[in-house]
Image 1 (cartoon, helix red, strand yellow):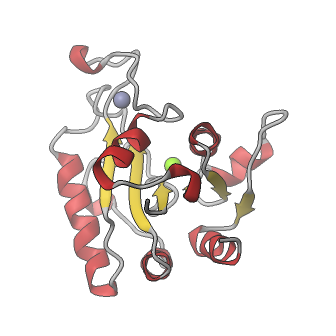
Image 2 (cartoon, helix red, strand yellow):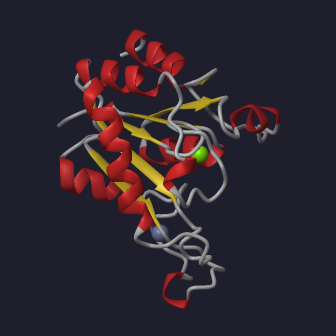
Length: 187
Ligand SMILES: [Mg+2]
Ligand SMILES: [Zn+2]
């Protein structure tokens, strides 16, 4: 089975502007393409797993997600840093769009998106890492037996200050490129 890096999107790959809903606000970090290329070269399958509850709240047009992810791929492609798959959760238990207002199986830290990636891509969570800027990302990894890294970009620096008692994490890194160096030295 293949090893993967499960990547949070907002605050990890790109600036977290809060319910990103227009392309003008999509800003990849300057190191994102380099970081992803290094991971690809090391043989990892790159999988985005992102909570997009703004759709359930009626704040993000459902069609925007595909537009946004196509644009990300378009920007990453020249650097040889294309993502292998992108999964999103568009639910929220208390949303305003009725059919999306459910306790779903995919909203992080629940493992639904990783379960889908295992089925679709044949990746093994136990050989994989999760990287994100919130404890819910770290706990997604903990739940599936992957290793987990919190990055200080996005909400990460604040999350680090509010670490729950007993919260496990394998590393806390300044940003994604730092996380890549940790991954490559520990695998
Ligand atoms: Mg995030
Ligand atoms: Zn969901």
